[in-house]
Length: 286
Ligand SMILES: [Zn+2]
Ligand SMILES: [Zn+2]
Image (cartoon, rainbow, N blue to C red; front, side):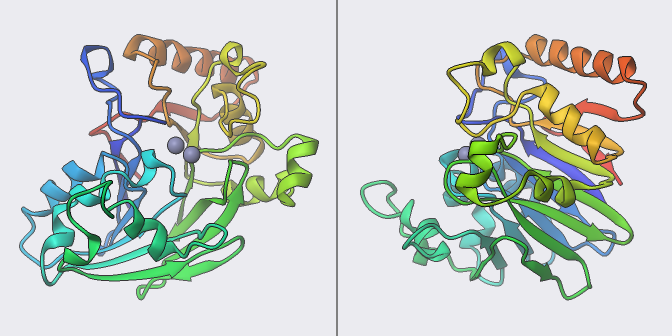
């Protein structure tokens, strides 16, 4: 399978001269299976450019869009995803619900007046909504499975484990290690996150903060440090780790330095883990 990053930034888009290499768009990852099946993780601002690239395809577009949660940096690009306005496009949107709001209400809500000028029902695509929750497994027609698991982040946030053609991709953006108190509040054990990413060929994981930035005021905000990301990947015997959800204040040089720290840490612990910084436009093959 082929994995392409269209948006790697966390919290808010951060375009500009200091973020040219890793990118300023918010979360969006395209996965192409060998049979051409299109899977998308999250619809941050990066999905706009993905939509434009898809328009050059001759066939009607069929896509499965897995949303981790409904924070703006994960859904805000969807109103600008042009294939959704084209008849013949088939879009299946999958993700968690929130309290009394259904997934459809959450997704259509951001396009209601006064937030957006065009309501979602104007989209001419056939759009299906599929609610996912902790432990649920969605099976695509070609047998590919995507398992959902709740991660530690405000609201209901899901991580995903995609298994296709003998390869495993884990996508766990927006999460913080479970402390004892947090684990009991969410009633999900830390081991669950570990199981979700276990032995993945590629783990795309929240690495928003440096350890210095994390403590003490940002504890409980639902994000990890780069060291948390490396430790999780090592514990789970992951082959390759992509640091993701870069902090909007981090420049390309900051992320280079974070990556260097990660590689140094891995070498000190005699690990075989390969570590990369997720960057817009970069394609990884599994
Ligand atoms: Zn986020
Ligand atoms: Zn979030």
